[in-house]
Length: 143
Image (tube, rainbow, N blue to C red; front, side, top):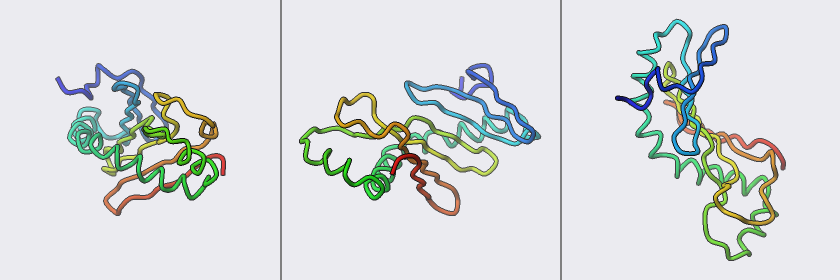
């Protein structure tokens, strides 16, 4: 049985023109977005094919988010670099797969599996989007 089976969705969020199905793998939310006119089975088939590669690129997404975050809040990262603490400060919180556009967007923010101080500003994070045209990183929250 595929992981992204319609019957295993935690939630379904329809809007005027699209549908979002929600899944969870470990601590990471997985959303599958697709136009309301696209059959669920088609969208989930595309997303299921995209999922292994998307999962495999999470480490790269975290690295890109950290690079962008370092440019936005350098004082925070300076303290972290001097702390001597090892481990990733950031982690992927969600993966959104756009089945129609065949793009993947990761939301990256504080890694709650690692205890460190000071904490990352509460509203700080980054969206890392990979599409056919390349990769973009958008930092959100505190600067």
